[in-house]
Length: 290
Image (cartoon, rainbow, N blue to C red):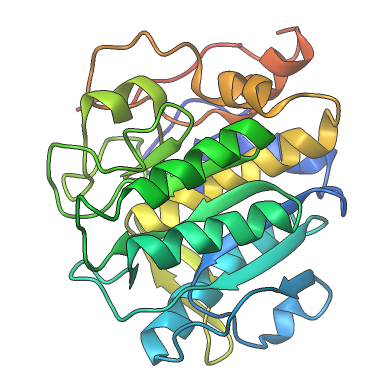
């Protein structure tokens, strides 16, 4: 089991992913939806099971960079799983993420679920929030819950206190960003619902694939979410009979916390919790400290 976090701890070690990755590369039957910009034909993705579903989505350079970065992170964490690239329409959000309308985002989530996703990663923001149209997102999250599909959503990078339609949903795993020591980043959005049912993951200096080829560095909650989605996919691969609810509980623990800051992801402890033992790990979940 990795030791406690330090200033030099690598992202995978910080959140207990490396020992989990040593047990499994992920199962092809476990599909992860990537609701984001389109994914470039990067050489590093040549051996990855990548299916493109739905419309083509935004062709903007930012969308392509963002989608490739997120897909690259997932391919690095769970390369044996199947990635379902579902591009969304829209331009860039103010915080640099890919933006979409509520209807387009809801449709993309539903498409991933229909295609058999066990996990859906949403590292996107709403471009045109409107109370009259957010019911579609609630219905998409309800559908994910009914199908046992884990819905992992970036909390956002506005540095605000308050949730969104998705991050307030009890089934959604909202992801905030932390630094290399596990401390929460001020740019992350926080809320009581995020603190109760969310999780924190690395969001500084994260390396992944560049749409132009090679490697690039980025951060924020968009980069943090794939760590949680990848962990969920590995858990589903290692314990295929586990329900979505069981995996969610193993990752997030009981929703009894009162802090607006969620705990730090501990993928190895989640695995030990899921298989019902702590012989090979601490079984304790580290908490991101302000």
